[in-house]
Image (cartoon, rainbow, N blue to C red; front, side, top):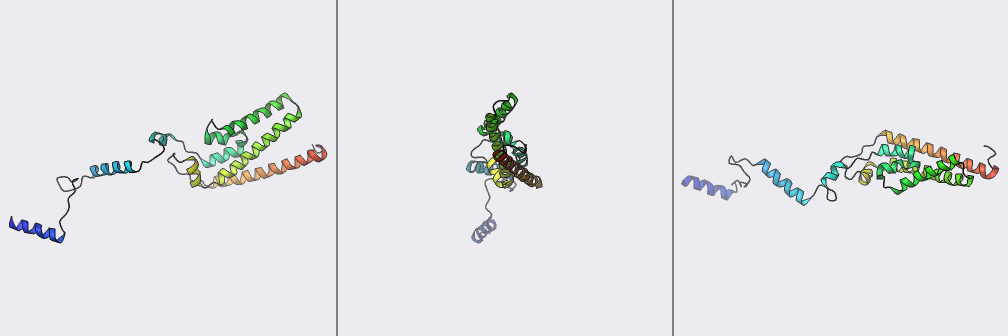
Length: 197
């Protein structure tokens, strides 16, 4: 007993006494599961995973693909397809594009006065070029910024490859060709009254 007490005093003096945690098992090994449970509880209380959204929203939020959005804006941007994909059915500008196209269709089919035809045709062309510009903006947006804007709660990170770059090139070529054709046709109508067809 005396030797044991002496050894304990020497360990205290040299700082070699091993501090035991209250979370230890009888064998002297730490209770890992209990410590992890306490740590995770404290961490969750101090820093929630999603401060502004519930876990259910985090699991159900769909990931918005940047390449697919660019393709929609290039092909069907005049109908607001990309905006329906990104913002849902409540997006006002998407419905404006649909209404312009529907009105133009009605004017053409009903053969209404040419002034209405030109009016809605110009509006449709504006919507068309707006869709191409939106495609360029979407395609050239960095993946990190894109995820921050549209995928903050999806749980996935975008990794765009060469497909979106090719779409941007195609969109630029299509937009340039359409713009030149529109300018040429406008000058033809203004100067010659449509003499060249």
